[in-house]
Image 1 (tube, rainbow, N blue to C red):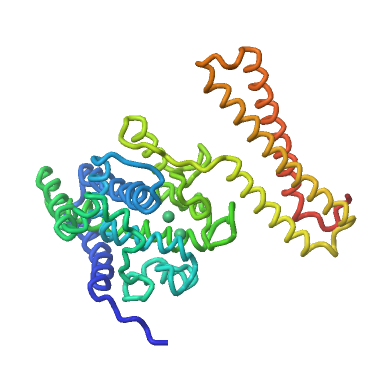
Image 2 (image 1 turned 180 degrees about the vertical axis):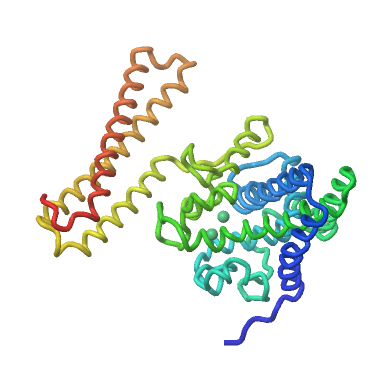
Amino acid sequence: MQKAPLNWTNTLLFTLTPLAALTLVPWYGLTHGYDTYEVVVFILLMGYCGVSITAGYHRLWSHKSYKAHPFVRFVFALGGACALQNDVLHWASDHRRHHAHVDNNDKDPYSAGLGFWYSHMGWILRHYESGKEDFSNAKDLQKDPIVMWQHRHYLSLVLLMNIALPAFLGWLNGDILGCLLLGGLLRLVLSQHVTWLINSVAHIWGRQTYSDASSARDNPLLALFTYGEGYHNFHHTFQWDYRNGVRWWHFDPTKWFINVCARVGLASDLKRCSPIVIESARLDMQYQRAAQSFNALEGMIHNAEVWRARLETEYEQCKAALQEWARHQQRWYEAKSTQLHEKWSHFEQLKLRDSYREARYRLKLQKQRWEALMQSMPALAGAPA
Ligand SMILES: [Zn+2]
Ligand SMILES: [Zn+2]
C-alpha cells in the first residue's frame, strides 16, 4: 500500500524538538545548572498547557460538557497555543471524528487499530485521508469568537507563548536560556507526549469497565500523568460527562478544576450522566465478562447449572436493586426540593428519606454479594456448589 505523503513541517517539528530537548536540556543543566525558579516555571507551564488541553480543548470545546466564562476560554486558547497541538478548531474537529468513528482505520484520525505508534504520533507526521481538514462537525465552534481569534492568530500566539513568554520569565530571573530550555523546550515536548499517551496507551492497556464497544480503556495509572484523562473507557462511553474519573476518589484534576471554576462563577452547566445509567453499564459489563468466562469453563465446573442460575439471579437482583435505589432517590430529592413550598409534611418527608436510605443499603449489600460472586468466578472449576 502506498504510504501517505509526509507532512514535512510536522515531521521536522516533532523530531527536532525532542532531539533538541534530549541534548540541550541536559547539556545546559551540566554546564550552567537550573535553579528553583526555572523548575517552578517548568511545572507551572506544564500544568497550564495540560489543563488548557484537557479542560479547554477536550472537555469544553470538543465535548461541550460544560460552559465557560469568556475569560476562561481566553486563558485556555493561550494555553492551547503554548501546548502547540494545533488550534482549537482543528483539534476539536479531529477529536469529534475520533469519537464518531473510533477504531475505524479509515475515518478515525488516530485510530488505535493502526497500532501504538500511529495513534501516538504517527498520524501527525503524514497527510492521511482521515486527518483531512473538515470543519463540518465543528460549526458551533466557528461561532465562538475566541476560537476564531485563536484560529486566525495561531502562529503568532504559538511564538508568543513558546518563545516570548519563557524568554520574558527567564529575563526576570536573569537567565533567558535556562527558562527557554526548561519552561519552553522540555515542557513543550513532554506536554505533547503526555497528551498523545491518551490516544495510544488509553486505547491499548487498561480495563473496559463500562463498554467494550470501542478499544478505549480505563487506566488509573495514566490518569496520574494526564490530569485525569486516563479513565478513557468511561469517557468514550459517556463522552458528554464533564468528568472522566467518575468516582470522587478517582484522580481527575481536570474535573476538580472545572468544579472550582463553577464554584467561583467561571463555569456552568456541568453535565453529569445519571448514576443509574453509569452503574447499569458497569454491571452489564461485569455480567458479560462473567458469562463469557463461565461459558469457557462450563465443562470443568462442578454443578455448573447451579452456578449459572446463581449468576443469573444475582444479576437480575442487582439490576432490580439499582432501579429501586434510583426510584427512591428521585422521590426523596423531589421531596427535598419541594420543602420550601410545604407540600410535604415532615412525617412524609422522613418516610421518603428512610425509604431511600433503605434502598441504598439494600443496593450496597447486593453489590457486596455480586462482587464476591465475581471474584469467585475464575476459581469455579472444581469448586463445590
Ligand atoms: Zn473525548
Ligand atoms: Zn479515545
